[in-house]
Length: 108
Image 1: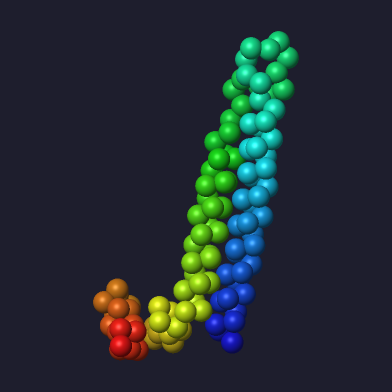
Image 2 (image 1 turned 60 degrees about the vertical axis):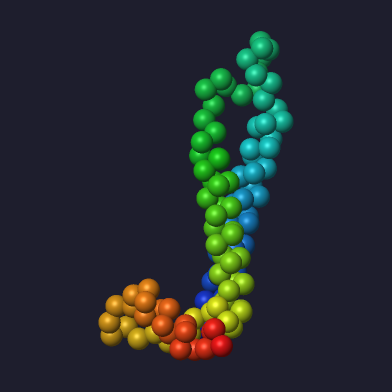
């Protein structure tokens, strides 16, 4: 049940990232196609138009899409997926996670 909830939320985040990436990239493509520069007397876009938020949306959503796709892929491959049942009685360090992965027989 917990694994299906995690997979469902990852798919929702992946779809949201793809949607944001598509809309932002389309807006950036429209700007690049219609920007004629300062040479003409009546430009469509102002000279000091700020594209940084749109570029940040494209870059951020691309990172989110890649991270969620890798998470879905590695969540389904049994060799690299960690068990969901980690105890919260003490802090899990990287060494604890690696030792749990080795004990599961990932390298056998």
